Length: 398
Picture 1 (cartoon, rainbow, N blue to C red):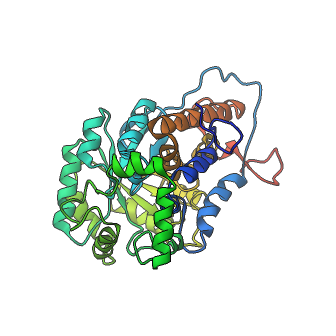
Picture 2: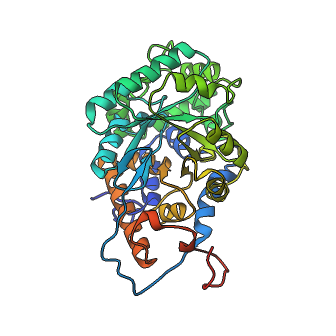
């Protein structure tokens, strides 16, 4: 790899390196959309800090010559406890980014989840891959169109439906407001945005011209002008349904034959409700801090939810995961697997499919080292005894 990450002539080695490459290569409004979060972005930062505060318990003189990093999530065997999370507008970050990421995930033996608001359609991803991928959905006002999307996902062989439940209303993402992501710029702002686009000729040619990024593949029959971000925002505003309740889960179940995973659970009572209504799993998630700021970090909410419902359904986590060490920590707290969002977004924006493949390879290596030096040979054996909290007696477990 010849990519220069920080002007030091170094190849990218971490998610932070890929973030820097993505910042350089993307027009500002797209990087801010990928990188930003709600309000003061406190929760987005705390997601990472909560994982960083956790300390691994190093153990020695154990036979760690053979390690098993594979697991089974919602009936699907995966080589690493990772799922590439649904990432809206990913195809605006790199040419046909969802296809590139799905291919990299298939190569690495991990799961990929297609977003409702992706650029590449369900059918395009299906045609480009052989492994089954997951599908993410919002319960929208137009139930007929929602039913159509479910039918398309089932026809594509998607085994898992990821139902996002924390978008009753859209959080305020001030970076998007300032840079006019959905319009509303002054003349000066429009000129600045035009200059920004011209300052990124590689993105203009490869993505904007060749990649046709503003054609929302799953929404072409729903959005009047699928190439217009303001039109897309107007459709989203009209379709996200604040009236959705737990009763609607039964409607989803009637129209979906596979597994159902609820994404966006932070509260123990909500987790218990999900379990009682027959969800197959849930994702402890605050939407990457992109919805309500100042809520709990995912890693802080995870143990209580695992303790409450982990014996009844599968619990995954997303939010702040940037390394294989983060994955080991989350699994030690009780998660079955982790979802990666921004991490693969940075990688695909920086280097396309090769970037996502490399990022997953790095995470595998990091997990291997962490597990070996903690004396754990199987991801299924990771538990809270693998952790220490900063300041604790080294002989005390978390």
